[in-house]
Length: 128
Image 1 (tube, rainbow, N blue to C red):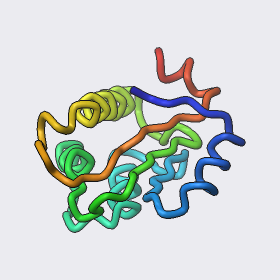
Image 2: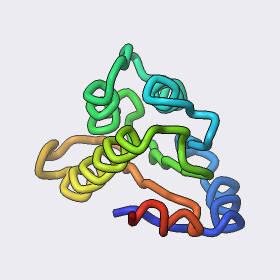
Image 3: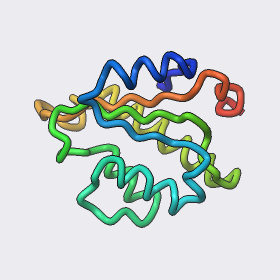
Image 4: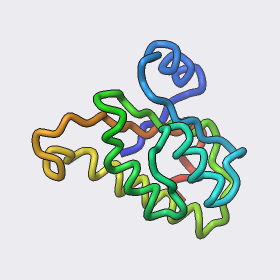
C-alpha cells in the first residue's frame, strides 16, 4: 500500500520523525543502477546491491536498522525507462504486501517498519 501526501505533508513528516531512516527518491536517481545506489546508500546497506533482486532483499529485511522506521519518500519519480518503472513499482508493491504481513515472514522478529510515500500529484502516473 502506497501513501500519497502533499509536499507540505511530506515536509511535516520529515521534520517530525527525525529518528527514522528516510530514503529520498527524485529524478536524480537515474536508471536502475542509480536508483539501487540511492536506496542502498540511504539505508547504509551492508550489501553490494547490483540488481533488482538484491535491492528487493535489502528492503524486505533491513535487519541492521533494528527498530527504526524506514520511510521511502518519492518527491519525484525516478528517471527510469517504462520497463524499469514497471519493475520498480512491482517491487514496491511486493515489499509493501510483505511488510503488511511481516509477522508471517519473520515471526517475533524485531524489525523496522517500512512505509512508502509518493507526492500526491504523482498518483495518476503511478496508477497507469
